[in-house]
Length: 162
Image (cartoon, rainbow, N blue to C red):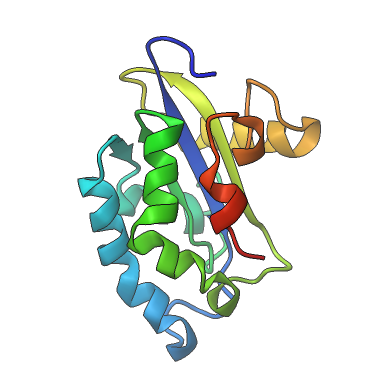
């Protein structure tokens, strides 16, 4: 249950099968502005780590994500589980989600973590990775969780693929 005066932060981690300039992932690359634009216009969207900051976190040796040049991730904040769930499953994002097996290395990290943040808080990548690792090592709790932990979340049960 969402605590009063809190929003929902989410981090998704993915590793592309091919380099960013490979033609086999160009539909994904070319769709990023469309999907991110839909997020920015979605009811309940609060904030997203800017592209240049995300690029640094993903690819730099000084970043928090392992300096993998094929990393493709998002860190964002939403007003509620329901608003994030609507964006993920009922917008153009779903068309791209359904094609994830074409673009992402499904044997590599493709994961998702959520946690509550006080209204106005913008999580850092260090914080997000700590939450992700906590979920990975300890399982779902109020500290970090996935869709199945949140009773309000229902769309993932019928709309998620594979």
